[in-house]
Amino acid sequence: MDELLLSRALISDLANTDTHSAPISEPTLSDLQTLFESDDPESIDRFWDQISSNNISIASLVRSFTETMDSGPTHLALFSSQVYLSILISPKSPVFTLFTPIAFLSLLRSIRLSFNRHRLPGNSADDTAADKDKARKGNSKKKKKGAGGRGRGLSDRNGDNEGGGDGGQFDVKALFRVLERLDCVLERIHLARFPDSLKGLIQTVAEIPLTALEFVENSGSYQRLSDLCFRILNGVLRPEHGDQTATAVEVLKALTPAILLLKSQARVAALRFVTREMMAAARDSEAVKRAVIYLPRYLANKAPEKAEPRAFAVESIMEAVRVMDVQDQIGFVENVVKMTQGKSNLRLTAVDLIPMLLMSLMNSPDFNETNGGVHQVQVSCLEAMIQRCSDTVAGTRARALSNLAQIVDFLCSGIGDQTRLVRIMGDGGIDLKLRINDVLRTRCMDEKAAVRKAALLLIAKSTILLGSSIDDDLLKVMGNACSDQLVSIRKGAMSALSEVHLFFNVVSYILYFSIVK
Image 1 (cartoon, one colour):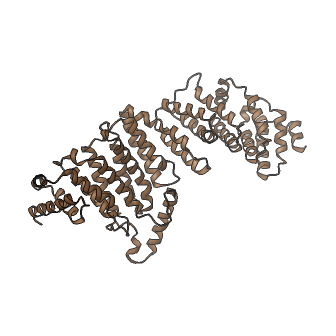
Image 2: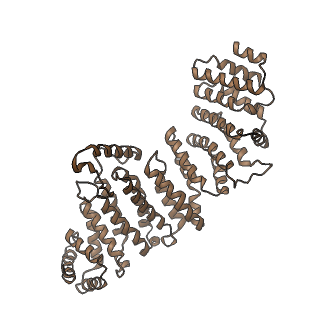
Image 3: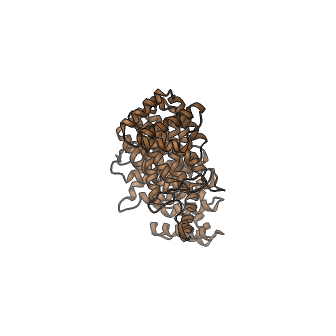
């Protein structure tokens, strides 16, 4: 169609829309898209002149876009969002008149609904992304086995889908087009004046890598989609979009569900964004840094109680901690020590974090040890772990004992390093023999088998802490454990006695008595 005829037809359609306050039709949207992607300044200038001369209100035009995004079919709502953004990024568009918070929120809603309307029956919003990931991989295998075009799944060979009907496949290309223009819009519109729009943008874009696990089967497509989302999130951290600390906090909170997932592409992508892009921004901006160094604390408070999810949460926390400055790491360790006095879920998370934090710090070349090679934070960690060995919750007691054994093993590893542990404990003013013997003697007789087993493991690892001789009562307790009803406890007791014998290099009558009794 000739540009002049196209412009006239558009004006006629838009005048109709303006009169009836109706949604914009798909042909009119297509014509608008053609016009604003033509890179023809004269045609675009003529369009705006005709809008003015025909008394078509720009505010009414925006309302029509909003109506289309809110009430149109999924593909039409997304297309309307794409066209609206194309107009916004056009060089001579009246940006401040065209952009309204209501229209922007409708645009974000159209993105969210594009996923919800294609969600498979039976999939609720509470499904974990790990389950979605498994289902996605399973469906991919099934589709590959199918015949004909049905085996292609949601994406073509290049990772994109040409479909877009409401009842059909999820249109990845349409989403890409909207997000690419959304990224460009952030260069022209500063969201500092629109906090609700900024918050909605962060929440919507941060959810896409998580939600897309169910729909985007091609790993290359998924990677490009998540990269685009994180580019947008990185863009909102610029100062022109408002307080950088508050914005960074919102971004990190929105990414937390992905970071706390089990094995998932979304988790990997979110962690990579935080540890690379956000940490890079933190090095240049103190405001962003204030939010980033708080992330491990926030994640620690959100960590699940179940063993496997908690283990992944601890791993995610450590990924964030390792890229922090040493002083910030020490600050986090001090916070974790305080967590050991908190609620049961926090105590359990802290007990899992302390060994990894100690190992990470002591392996860091930038860790500046003081007080004769001992840092107070090391002493605090060990004291906290010893206290948790007598926790009121059996699961926490068992974890504390086994993790303390892990710490002891780490600190005693290497030639000549055995004295390091004794030096650290001694620097804290702890009576080694009394404290360790008391804990071990009590826990070897604990009512819970897991605690007894962990206590015996700690004995096997910590003979260096028992001094020049071993406590008679502890030896008897170990001997009694050799007759425990559980095979694993009996094996643990024999292993601990073997370590004691090797370390002290003597088989005393007490040892003999404790075994044969």
